[in-house]
Amino acid sequence: MTTTNVASRATAAPATSGAERRIRPAPVWAGVGAVILAVEAFAIVRWIASGEAVRTPAGPDPVPRSMSVAAHSVEVICPVLSAWILWRFLIQPWRRDGRIGFDGVVILVCATLFWLDPLYQYTRPWSNYNAVFFNLGSWAKLPGAPNRSAHLFPEPLIFASSLYIAMVFGGMAAAGAVMRTVQRRRPRRSKAAVAGIGLLFLFAVDVVLEGLVFVRLGLYVFPGASGPMLFKGHYYQFPFDYSICVTVTWWAWSCIRYFRNDHGETIVERRARHRPGLRFLALAGALQLSGLLLFVLPMNLRGLGAAPWPDDFRNRSYLWAGLCSGPGVPCPFDSYERVGR
Image (cartoon, rainbow, N blue to C red; front, side, top):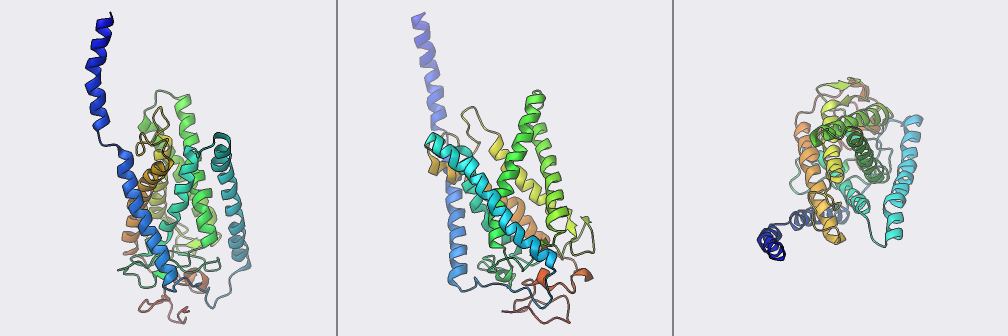
């Protein structure tokens, strides 16, 4: 019996050694993450150093009181929600366990995703934030950008940065809870079916939260939208192609977070759970790259076919300030002067 056991272990040894020699995904994804984070740092430092970090004004039309109240309210609500999430998922587990947990790493990665927000303005402007938000323009005017007024995009620094923790991570956690409930109650369902339910859940959340709340409040708008949409012809029109891209990106991030092996590792950071730096970079690589490919790229291609703006935007310069403020960028309404610096 002893001989048999020794022989079995000897036979199994080469297989284990072969597995150890396989390329591990964590260093590869960490390299991707390091490169993208370096580009992010370059874009933001260049934006500040160039002197382009200057507020984009709201233009000549008065901002309705309801929109101003809504915008400044979410500039308080979202940071408060973000602070609670940081405490609940990052700081408390860290204090309890003496190390940053998995969700704590994911939250830190979500904070770095904020730089993607204005990049869909790289080719041509077709969507915009309300310029009543606290803004300093944006870093979207990267070298070679066809959109010469991309730096005037009024990125709401307080609202949008906290949204990538409150909404993005919050939605990932909610989608994970939904998928976990489905797996518990229907254990025979395949992973694909469970993931599909998560996708439908996130699409419903996005349409309600963005299409029926945020856009309706005038926090941001899609004047150049075309194709199927809600409320077509109004300043609060909401295109489904945008929602689909947001949902698919959000869902990809949620699946990366949710589907883990028995060691609590995602597919991109195997054998890195005890190395928080490597784990952070690997997750950053996966989430950043999927955000670029699933959201930034298709939205820039979508912007090339921007539709004429509805008349409902005519007397609302605060909703398109920055979109036609740069050199050689025509305003859609000739009766207005350019909203310049």
